[in-house]
Structure formats: C-alpha cells, structure tokens
Length: 245
Image 1 (cartoon, helix red, strand yellow):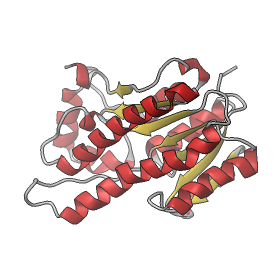
Image 2 (tube, rainbow, N blue to C red):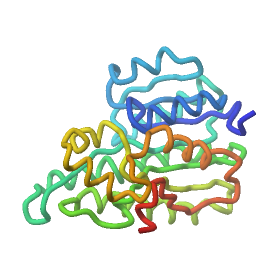
Image 3 (cartoon, helix red, strand yellow):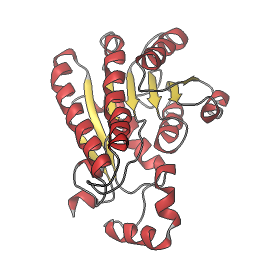
Image 4 (cartoon, rainbow, N blue to C red):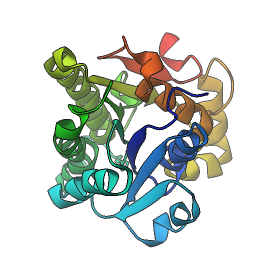
C-alpha cells in the first residue's frame, strides 16, 4: 500500500499537464485531493473522479488559497500537503518584453506560491509529516535565451522553497521543489508543434526524449509522502539529465 493512502492533498494548476497527472497519481495512491484551477470548465474532469473535490479560482487571490484549504478540511477532515504547481510562461528579450508580462509571471509563479504556503501552513502544523512541493524548473537552475521573465520566476520560487524549508523544518514540515525539464504539457505544446524546435530540445536531453507528465507526478507523489520524511529544502530535477550535462 502506498504511504500516501488516506492522506489529503491540494494541487493547484490541476486542469491539465503536471497538475492533473499529479491529482490522478495521488488518487491512485489512495489519497484524497482538492484540485484547484482557474475555471470551472478546466476542472470538469476532476468532478468525475472519486475522492477529488474541485475548487475554481485565481491562485493569485488569498481567497482562493483559503478556499482550497477550507475545502480539504470540510470534505476530508485534514490537510497533509500541497503541491503548488500553477504557473504561466513568459518569453521575450530583456529590453523588449513588456514589464506587464514580467509582473504577471511573477504574480502567478511566485506570489501565488507564497499565498498557498501561507494558507496551508496552519493546517499542515496539525498534520503528521506535513509537506509542501512547489513547481520549479530547470529554467530556474540555468538560464534560457529570451526566457528572463520565466527564468527569474522559477529561480525565485526554488529559493523561496529552500528558505521556507529552513523556517518550518523544526515543526516537522518539509518544503521541496520539483524541477521539470522538457516535459509534454500544454505549456510546451507550441514548441513541440514546431518540428525543428521539438527536435532541438529532444537532442538537448541526455536521455534523448521529452518527459511525461506522469513522471513528474511520480516525483511529486514521493516528495509529498512520508517516504520522503528526511528530505527538505531540495530542488529535484526531473529532466532526463539536462542539469547534469
């Protein structure tokens, strides 16, 4: 039996990609999950899954994060961990990309994660082996051309997770980041639709392929679980060897 059996988690950015794959993995592992995303329509699939409650809302709002935690307690009686995964891309040269793009990327990819942590921590203090996982990126470990907005946000969220891990370690709460490399998600669909770009990215991966969302979900499930009880403050690349090269 999975060590996640009987535990309660919340996942943001749950409509598709890594978020949806993680909800599905956690349910398969026996957990109950609050699935959070921006629109009701994006969460239609979640409402058809046993042990999943859907919460639609903007994660940059404190109210949505509070509703996420409240739904876990109301429907399942506890909250053992959160996967703060919602994010948006941002591209363009440093002197050409609008600052409005930078502001939006930082709001969703960084500020919303802080709000999620702040909302969850009071309940995680009541849990046995509470855990937080955030979505970083290999783009937060190394830089990408024309990726300064996204790179900045992911570097920030990785270091924020490490700092938070130090703040709450004495309370038995773990905080880690999972760092996807090139992964098949909606966010990367445009790149994968361009044959040359997709092939160049594949060649940059030592394992010579794109990652699957389910492979990221497996890593998140582990980091949330009591099996990772002595792991905190880690930025775990799940990238086919990209950051080792």
